[in-house]
Length: 146
Image (tube, rainbow, N blue to C red):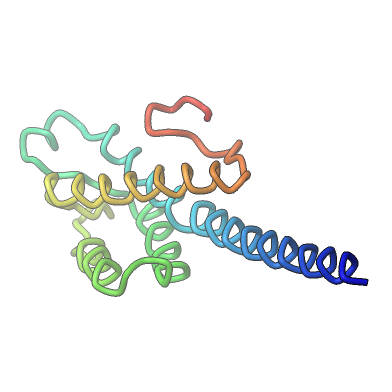
């Protein structure tokens, strides 16, 4: 009877630990899929597509379609960010649109925000991998599939 009790307690403990691990893994996957990866990819694309004249002016332009995607992601899933970081990113993204329907941002501030998102994205990927998840559809910043 004692052995059965210990076995039942051990089984319950393992089930609770696995449940917590799966919840954390699901949360990390949602953060990566819904916030960090989409924002990183759009912002990284904007930096890579920066024209020579924009580089000379030290600005980064984001077209209206990509801007809408960024704002949708931020407003829909920004709760994953710390409140002060959410406000900082929102303030950066809300900039006036020029005549060509492009929003421009100071290069240094935009790249700093991109770096923040990229670092958290990698941290979450590592955490996901440690929890037994495998971010097979996500890529590292160099473009190589992990």
